[in-house]
Length: 181
Image (spheres, rainbow, N blue to C red):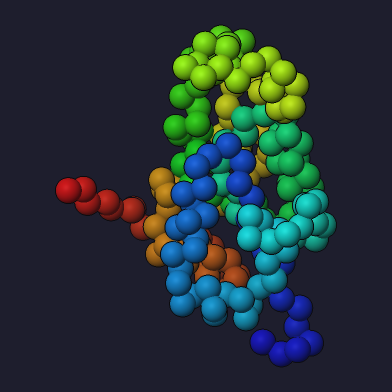
């Protein structure tokens, strides 16, 4: 890449999830070094940027939309990004994060903050962003351009997706096979 060419502006975001997708991203190992030559990481857990920037080329969004802050950030991501990738099963389907959807929010907060073995207390609730009625997969909050399933997606799937996008190709993913035991 010549000095005159501007690097692709890449962002990663962690909403309501476990950060496993970001851990899998870090498992790209040596490919991360090659990636740094092609992209400028402008936002994410590994970058000390407080506000989501404008003019993002590619944004990987991990996790379900669970609260009003997540929803606001998702909308900002969509308006400031050319391509939004639903990154991992919580973003794609709601997955584990959406298991709370069967419990009314008031009952959930009561169980966690008042009836837990070590109750936290109502004063803590005032500092938390309000929970949405349901945890949403990303596409139910904003338009998504690419879906990257997996819990978490394997480093190979992440590499195939990011490489295709950097090269201007369509993303075509093979089924991800996992072995257990």
